[in-house]
Length: 82
Image (tube, rainbow, N blue to C red; front, side):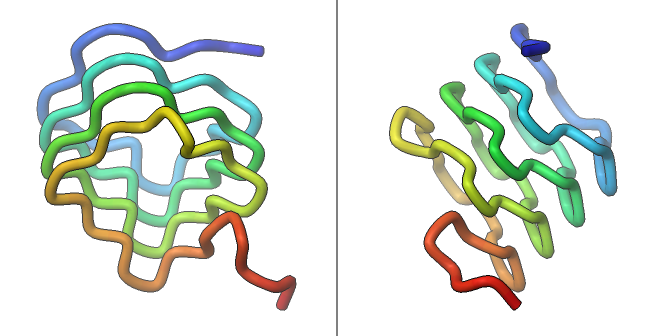
């Protein structure tokens, strides 16, 4: 399982395939909109991050620390399959 760990300030990972990865760094102002984060583990700190339209189905968010995160139109872990 690949891990993204470190400080990510600004920038974009929009639409990226990050399924099954571990995001354990600090993400400030990063665009993760429309990213595929299915079955990923989000254990980092997310401040002013866009997850708009992201696929979070099956993702583990139990240890994520989120402040000011946009989750509009995102597919959340507990959502029923389409």
